[in-house]
Length: 363
Figure 1 (tube, rainbow, N blue to C red):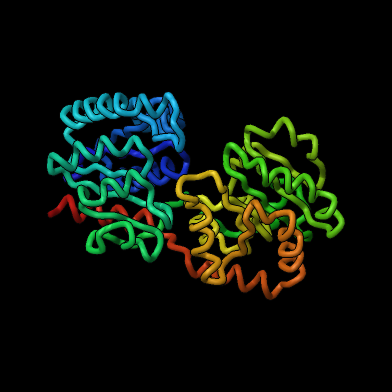
Figure 2 (figure 1 turned 90 degrees about the vertical axis):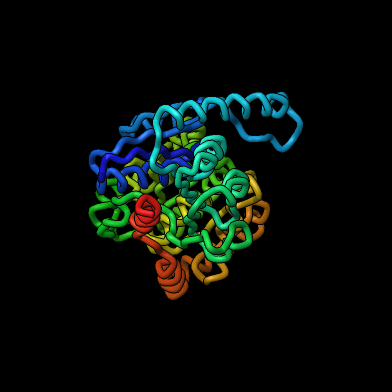
């Protein structure tokens, strides 16, 4: 039987959306006649990104709780009731054989309804510190696919399968051809290149740091591919030159990774998983503004393995230049970090997750 029906739910950030799309693509490759429906939050980026990937999506009127008392928090009970009612209608109409949740508040009502009806449910947790929605669902689902060790602190041990995080197939297949990648960006392949990643929206503090450091990078002959984000492109595009390439968004991340010799990045789960596969020396600057400070915990999981360097935002002024200089001047340190981070790669994550889903369908 390959005419299964699957619902995938998760969103709010690319870190929840892209793994869900990767899982759907693998399920579709194995089951060409299967039907797919995504469920997200009405006003979030999944409503745009999922249709671009070729899948139908329905939105729930739901949002997360704010950290302080706001009007949005007062509306939360009404949104939750509305979303549970809508999720019930979706599940009744679509009759899924399995439901997959990749985190984010939209997946909560959907998986609660589906699991209550005995439909097999799978969670995919990207971070080393589990999100609140997945923690609330832990006793209701059949399997929980994780990317880090030690997740029994959040989930029942017998449900955990360590799979890694799904990443884009072009990165798994990347040849690592620096000459071709450098040509793509108009850079000199014989020179060292720094790749700066602040996420699709951008990271204000990282952008400020790079702006302050441009003269220093130039003085050591280092080229820069700078993904500053769509919120900041107007401010920083003036720095475009022969040796500095500024983008709001990099469409060819396979080339960006191949061209970069050293990477500065946020520590979102998807970025961390991609960087493990790419195997380049990385300095993580985690965002301090995310739930449960999970980016710092993601980065620390690699630092403890000798697989990355971390500088917290509050320590950038005192620590960044020293740590960066030490890394640039030590080829052995660069090789050590690249080797250690590569050991943590799990390039078959999507296939392993879908294997687990298929096992549940056959039970």
